[in-house]
Length: 420
Image (tube, rainbow, N blue to C red; front, side):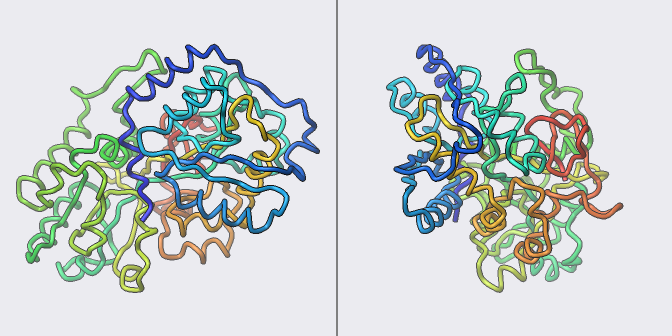
């Protein structure tokens, strides 16, 4: 199973340290002067690709597929451990020995691009015929004053997992997941009443990133934001945040009634979702990437996903994370890196992302064949298209904090998060 949850344990201290480290380097960004017609075309040699262990599934599959089809250009993969990906990259930059391409957590891209540590790839991104179909949130994080220092690599989203078998055994409709927090609490109680080690609900209580990944969307769906304002002058909205208080009270109710595993209190994300995978939990706000571990016919029949509901159920939401491709300034084989990036973003590769627990970053891969590919987990399709009027997918909030592949062009959604 892909361990995407590990990325959420990255502390702000590590990012800050990387920023200071980079600042000491005094580096400057570079851009290739090579024509868009020749850059990334028929490159040769070796491309050193650094990817995070947290998203190693797609990285391994892409490298294997590329190397099998390109005899004159080979990609060598290096996986960076959780919580050490930014420091390893900063160290390489300071040493003047950078990789050719990096799959960097999208939230970390601004740290490096603002320190001029990444190559300006603006003309090459603009030349992509499918540029308009790229995830706007991912692309915005790699943009400074209209210049691009990266582009989307993969997307990861939070969903509401539920066990249809346990719903049925508890007398609930297996085709009707909870649509608000009141229903989550009520359904959890009925499922927990089954006994025999069955719990209605589960959460990663000692993983701040996991909690933010799964709880913040339920606030965004209501137009409420825990953190407000532009970077540098942000303020927290806690004391007067009624939806937040309701959600925390509901978590407390389920914990106090022993409807959640005792281990949830110390769950730091390392084994997050394993209890649901074992069929012992009815409802789990979690990572879409868990789907990569659900491989048996029984799991496909019993497990289902839905968008995370707002606290009051008026809308639905998800947290869009993932990685961007970036080429460090001074990369030895930047042309080879760009050839690999273009290949990875082709539809033939994108449609395979769900099998690795990830979401494509191109809206134009939402074709009938992709729909058949991702038939088990419909939230992937929901995240990429608003859906019919009145459906869950259509009730989309597009705000500054919640940008989306599904958000219409011109909406205020223009940063790193989207709702579906």
